[in-house]
Image 1: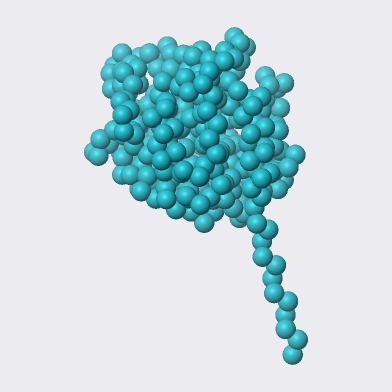
Image 2 (image 1 turned 30 degrees about the horizontal axis):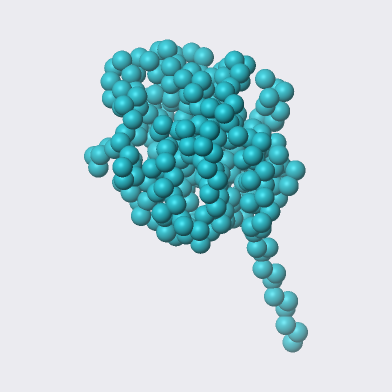
Length: 304
């Protein structure tokens, strides 16, 4: 595993829980926020590539990756709590510079909710098969997710049999299907029933109706997206994603008509894995072409 994931592991204690994160390199901070059912492993190749020029920060959400996996009695598996955790981490790391957000899957809801709290801290956006708004026009909630979210058999499949993580690893890459070893690495943190609680709670926390927890927060994020319209943004999209599909991409393009868009017709949900040889250079070039403004120099003291 160390050859695939060659990083120093760091932990922040949050309410007696260990919150795992990577903090590699120096320079302008690039914060990568994963979704479900993945973990910081998803961003490993991008992190390795960027860490010689940037400060790369990649957390594992509580319940995911190498972070603790508490029961419901010890942690609130909600969108708001995820945003609170990310905010606490960046405060702990004393990140004072404006950041670049790299977001994927449900990581965009978390990352963009953080951005909504602190719009002045966001410098650039990298969007990877995700959303930051309610279901876009023309998109219906996939039946497979509905079963996982709303039924006892779905909960059994997700938590007892780990089918959500196993199937995501199997179908998430279309151009370059994952090897057995790679699928094993993606699923390794979720090897017991207890360790799969976040995988299930993430799905159950998807807000579809106004009375659902998190619905108002997504509305708030959605309504504030225009604050980021002038920021540099690049979008890399696997078009064979049955959840975050063409409808989500179209909505991003509608809201951010100036964004760079790179659509990969033969790739799936795990675009950073499926087309890493193309996506990582695209992100590198995007960052280089949109450097952050250096901090303004302090005015010299006037002589008396």
